Length: 158
Image (cartoon, rainbow, N blue to C red; front, side, top):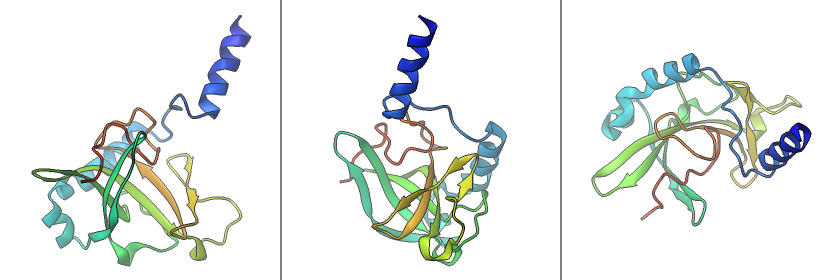
């Protein structure tokens, strides 16, 4: 019976129907929260070099991703955990709410054979945008997992 349960859980995880445990330690995520806490106010994020980037993203029936604000100058082949390249905001009638951060490496800048990794999690390829990306939902819990692209708890784009 135990083998059947383990096999069922493994199948659900691989199918994406259950969230895998979050990679990374709570201390690492706390450090990112502390570093990005002042950036809840968009004007402060803009003063820090972040600018509105790309349209708001959502996937009806799956969840929202939000409006991205990127520090374009920091998008290269290096990653600093406490300085994410992108801040992700949920659109709301009263403005934007910071819900996640995203780490980005251009595919042309990444020459290693292995995918980039942070917090014990591999980045995924986004061939449409030509990047490696890793979301971290540190300001809004994500039932799909802390590193999932879309979050059903985030509003769709207006």
